[in-house]
Length: 446
Image (cartoon, rainbow, N blue to C red; front, side, top):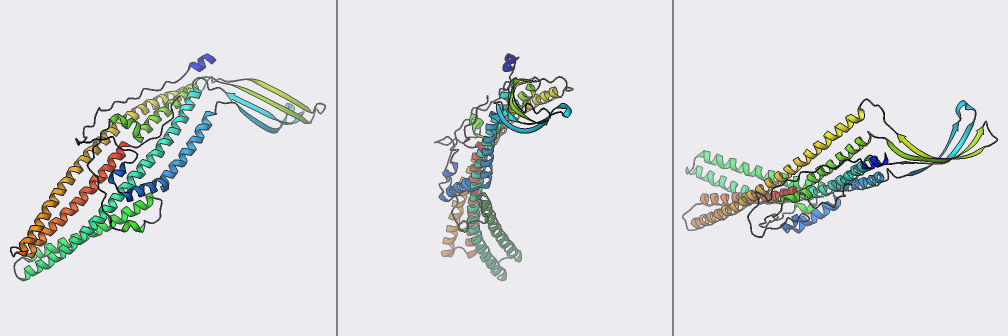
């Protein structure tokens, strides 16, 4: 029976790992490099952003919670390792003999040692290892998420501040345009509807300015929460330049996602845990074997007082053999088999979703980069037009309305470039969040 018990084990399923050989949406830019998963935000070369992320990793409450849960998982994993070790207990109690003829005061030691046969010890170790690895993954995922959220909030904050600056200029330009249109209406050079249209555009510019103020306040509030603070830092309200992202290209094999994406590693550990639960269910179909022993000193308090002190040592095997339970244990084992099969499919789904998310993020990052270059070209054209309109006005070939129209076009182009730079930066953050992060070494499954 002992030999059969040692030979009974539940094998781990082979996890599918099919991934494409290369990214479909990777950019063909010279100087491709492996992604810097441990410090990708340094590509912005922004000391303020670097400091904010360092502070968030130190003070973020979500990261602290994940760290404490990891400590708890490590303690429970140690407890699980000792479950099939011998234990020793000391007890003091009273007992009455059958028939109530004699009462005893007893004290001594007892020990129980359950053998983890029929794969029970291996299954228990797998479940404990999976729980510990899941806690490690969650702690790392919390750090990845915090870095991404801090970067996103900082990008939103700086973009809102730049939009607010341009929006204030637009409000002044729109106000001047309203005044010009009113003069043209009085001199019968324009219809009243054109003045009304200019007034509507002025109100829209004011609304855009108010929206930029709200966006900046929301981004600052989000940063405060991420850094574990009640109020935003007053220094954040000072106008700052947008983070500048250079031309970058990513060269990474999709198979790397199998070790960097928390969702995939989490699904992998769920398979390990499901295999452990199946191993426990299968072990429950067989007897539980072990040893028990005790050394008890009994002192008679009533009845037979001629021999008041008796020490009785006991040592022997213990066998718990299930005989009939109406198929409950077999039902549990069958259910655990289905759960293991489902976890394998969930792992495959996590791999497919991870590859798809990275491909989508790469495509978005490339499109946002093209849009940024286009906005730069548009801005250069409008600035040239504004300069031409100013020259024509100076030499008497143009009026103030033409110059105002050209300046408005230039300001609108600046807004478009600010938004394009913001969206490319956010796409860069989303791309690295899709890659995952540097996960710590995980424990090996027995």
